[in-house]
Length: 450
Image (tube, rainbow, N blue to C red; front, side, top):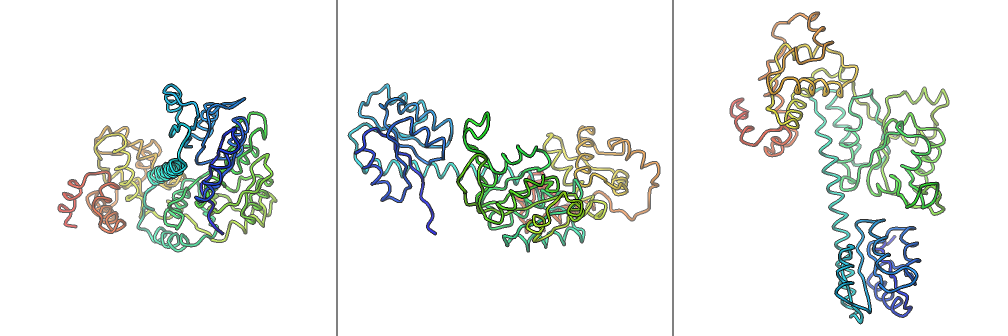
């Protein structure tokens, strides 16, 4: 199936001018829609998005400036080329102030229009690409490597690498705070869809109506207050990945709607009648036992099998205690950097207590503990007094043990070695992850004889 070209809206009350532009631009491979006046043009803009608008100025009852303003309101990244037979400096200045890409007086050369449209389309595409790259940077900044040297994490990493190359739906299971979204983001970043968007939604955070609106979007005036068209996540993530967190809390009616969308590979906005093809990968996550939910009648069996093509189990932190020190050092570097403080050390006794704790809140709880300690320590070394009260009380029950634990220097050496291995000895990348500069990293490499 051929790829559809960029969409151009042509607005002119002169039929010959409209048809000439439409003929020329269609030959260039563009999809064109024409409007005989500004009112029709605004209705077209409210129905669907365009890449470029070519509009005359003097029209009744709505002029080209109003078309320009409405286009920019609806789609801030759209490019608008203004054409007029009544050129003046004041109208040119007004058009540019309102955000027009270019101002062309009539009569114009058709080649000039062809070149300007091509440049406007390229600018629009570049802006979209930049926005997507920025989104990817934001996504990547929220995540890091799947940190851990335990057998459980090594197995999970291998599974993610194997699953990433396919397009199969994935169901991620694990307790709250284990890092299910991090696994989903890593899966996306390792997949052929990595250059496209990763969009996440918590299915338990919305009512049924709001969840439908978020996933499927809505048409203009689909309900009270729906003044503009809204694209849903399934549509907006075209070519990318949609992460459905807390899928076990999705209402049954929504499960039916989403199941059909996944089976038919189409979505339909609320209040709409047109099916929109979608190309997305679904990754879902839950801390619930979905098989029990099926038995209780709160989760559809057919929906479960559609989601559960591949299962990834994220281990509890209590089941991978070998990773606690690595995670603690990672959070210490990250949070000290965010707070603009030097990366303090953690006392051996504090490490021992961190290793003795069971972490009902898993990795998220450990990060909160380290954030509290970094905040209270004011850049000084972290000891028991900087840990939460329940961990301080745990210290009274846990007697200091002989040398079965590594020292902080030994743990730091192992952590640096591990990071270097993950980034294939890229010193610049390793320094970024560790939250230090390259010079400091080289000093540590020399000190620890790495």
